[in-house]
Figure 1 (cartoon, helix red, strand yellow):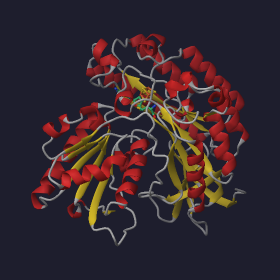
Figure 2: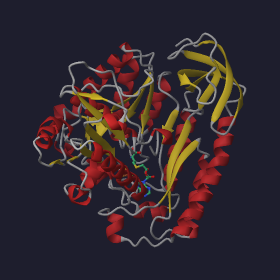
Figure 3: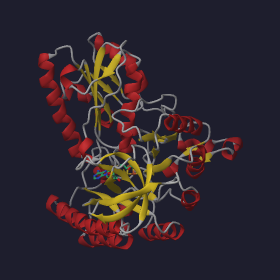
Figure 4: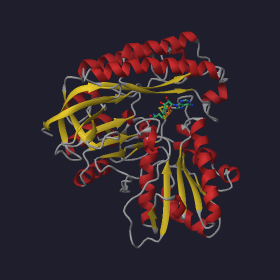
Length: 480
Ligand code: SAH
Ligand code: F3S
């Protein structure tokens, strides 16, 4: 994914334990953000009751589902390439059916059926519960489409199967959709209006994960700080809520508190925060609970007030700096990461310098950096000319990346010499005698395995580092 999900698992096919009753094979692969990977777990859970086992071998599939991303043009091009591959397989397996899920399905709707002859089924992100009916349609030889966006679907009642999981960390989605309407972004169009999930169903899921041995969860939403439960329904309709609903409403800081208390041994992360909705109550709740990790992903997109306004980001850079200062005052050890876009329409050299100045001011631990990609239907595409030449976008992007790289080194180095609590998540990719895990600030650490095991919280003395990895040795189990 762009973020949270590591680039190397893009397009990974998911697989889970086989149920003998099931007779057909589902091959499901995911692109894009953590929400898509999490949604694929919901889809696999729904289809497990419809006679499907998952397979990781495309050649054995009876149904191929691809959960897609529309955030940049390149993301869509990758999916179209995959469809070509499925087409080749279909030559040997004529009964094979192919469905497109997620943001591309929502953006292109039935146009996808015309443009990509291989596709039999198009299902938007709010329509997964309709999959049993849609599959029946395609089984009977008809194309099937459901791209209806919903006011209240949160899949809160579906217990997702955990696919390709390390058994230690899991995603839990808490909101769906986004109301922010950043002018460059396709998400509000593909994922609909913002709604929050019932806190009780979130707590139940977290408790269940703990019982199954999970030790870290990431609460997911396009804009988690905007979480608001007042009995169900769209965030925008909160304006019409009753006094009772207002009095008993649960916001993000309340939710964090509830989750942290429900499972004090579980590590808690969340993503993504938006500066305009993040408030100090959240930081205070983070400070109150040792099991909430000290990391905030706080995208800013640009350092120029003029560009922020054109992007419809509802804060100034001065307000952003004030927020960062307050965060660091309350939790000095906080890790911060960002998303940045180079070459938004009308961006000048001066605007670009302002972006570099933000990096210098905050000294982020890491970031995800992109060049602007015009998305059809967005405000920016309708109202602004994509007028920054590609070479300029790319040059500015590489300057941003180079500066961020220096800061990564600087920020990672600050952990050297310290003892840090690491949650073991798996074996090191480079050396199978070493464990791999992360510290509270989300930095990867590796250390000799000794007798420790997967899921242990271990105190590790950090002796050395590269720009993104800490290298150390265990000094004992942590108190957690
Ligand atoms: N709030 C969301 C943002 C999703 S998009 C979340 O959960 O993270 C992730 C990032 O992609 C954005 O923060 C932005 O930096 C980048 N992005 C979105 N639209 C883009 C576009 N049209 N061109 C380039 N980058 C884009
Ligand atoms: Fe996109 Fe802005 Fe929402 S980046 S997901 S519209 S917060």
